[in-house]
Amino acid sequence: MTKFVINKTSFEMFDVFRAYGLAFLISGFENRVETDICDLGSLFLIKTEGEIPKEADSKLFEETGSSWPLVFKTFKKRKDLKVKHPIEEAEHVAISEYNKILDIHRKYDFFPIFGKKVREGKTFYQTMDVSAAKGYREEKRDTYHDGSQIEVDKYSWVIASLGAAWFGIWPQNLMRRDASFLMCMVPNPKKVLLISHRDVQNALDKRLCVTSANASLIHYSVKLAQLTCRKSDEIEYDSVVFNVMQKTGQQPKPGGGGRYNLDLLYNLAKTPEGFKALEKIDKFLLPIDPRIKGIRQDIALAVTDFLMRPNLDNLRRFESLYIRGMTNKKNKFFPWDEPQLKEMLRYVEIA
Amino acid sequence: MSKLHELYANSAIEHFGMALRIAIGKREFGGCEDYASLVELDYVEKEEQFVIVLKKFLRRFDACARRWEREHPGRSSFKPSEKDLDEVVRLAQEYGVRVVCAAIMSHALVYSEKGEKE
Image (cartoon, rainbow over all chains, first blue to last red; front, side):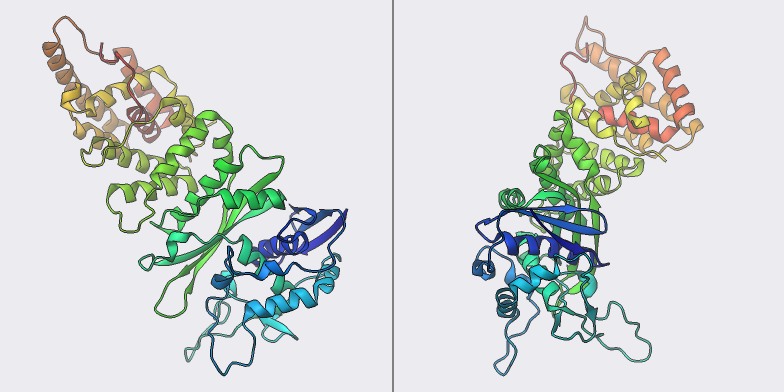
């Protein structure tokens, strides 16, 4: 067994992408070796069984089926540009420096190097972590300026790019013109077998509720909990890390991010009644079209708030709206089955 | 386990919830479309107000039940008992009005059992 280490930094999404990216670089597209990832708190430990492949798999840089174009969406192609496109650059680094990348991640003391200017560093894109966006860390006193780019060493950059391109979840329907925000999510691998993770992500429907960024996050988390609750020996996630970007006429601007804990959803999914309750909630989060308004949108927002903070106020808001939906002739909501609702009430926090 | 879960299983709460479910139901299905009680229960916060809201609700529900009995001769409508009322007021004092209202309203969200009206 060979072990690799991804030391965590303060960039949560970047760390998760690096963990998935390194594991994928080793295992390759065809799962050349069995690879699993464990979150040990301050680091991600990647364990591989079998002989480590001698070179990187060039299929990892193909655009089909990946999110490569989205990761480098802000890169502007110009005829007179002397630098390579970041995808080509990533491929070049991964293939030519494959052994070096593996070697430095075998050591427990390797930390990514960040700075305004890093030797052979690469631009740290906001799609890899929204807190890397320009101007996030600098105060602007007298005159306005965009802020400066942050750079990161090329070894960390290339594995984070791989992780973002193949493991970042970009909801398909948020690519519509009328959706006001962009979002990227990734489940935190508490203990994950890479091949099972890839199967789950392929099976997951990526059309999510576009009512708000929180609704998209909850919709994804509900789908994830439903798919993985019975596979805890192969896949264990503890949270979903998410980044939100606001669409503008120019480049997308940073819109915040964070981590959503999956405990509530997994607790619900454990029992058959709770699982059915999740299926019902999944249906409330149906407005995958941003033009859907009215009580269906309100219910989607109320159920999102309840699952984010299951307190009495949020439950009462949901109940009140739902009863209105049940009595409304136009939007007929069907009543709940008692055991399902009872299971949900088990987790309501009362201050 | 949440307090709300315990309250939900209480029989007095269950009976009041069942009454509320019937009260907000459509007239053609034997309900009386009593949305006023629903709104009042939604906004009540103090114990004194809660007692008044329950009184109003029971008065409206009684009228609804009498009408139903008139339309279905020989059958008697469901009504919460005096014991249920005492228990609900006691629970409101113990757990707080908002939690008790949430538990009653939760019962109004679920499917009614067959023959509930009888």
